[in-house]
Image (cartoon, rainbow, N blue to C red; front, top):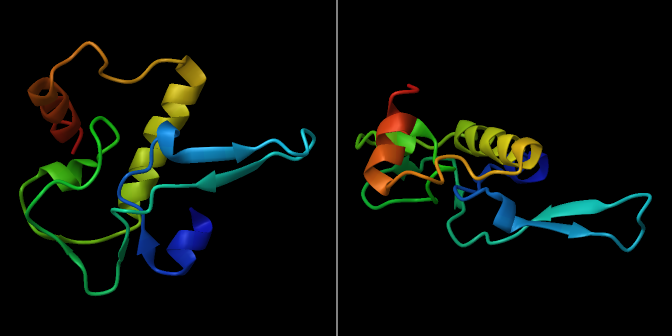
Length: 109
């Protein structure tokens, strides 16, 4: 994530399924981020129209319906959800429908 953000790239869809771990050396596993299909260079890029990302890893600003300048904060939010999932072993909001998930994420603004 640090490398991508250093290159002004925002991933937009950071989640456990997109993290690849190379265990060739078990003493030093290497984690890589995959699925860069939604990634965008953040400079002069607006978030508008269409949905980018996957519920429940989407940052609240992506669901607000307003155009916003792209920021690496979107990935930081998603990374927090990934950490929560890794620590609890559960996908957040797994028992909710999409509309309920969106409402819960937006209420965290």
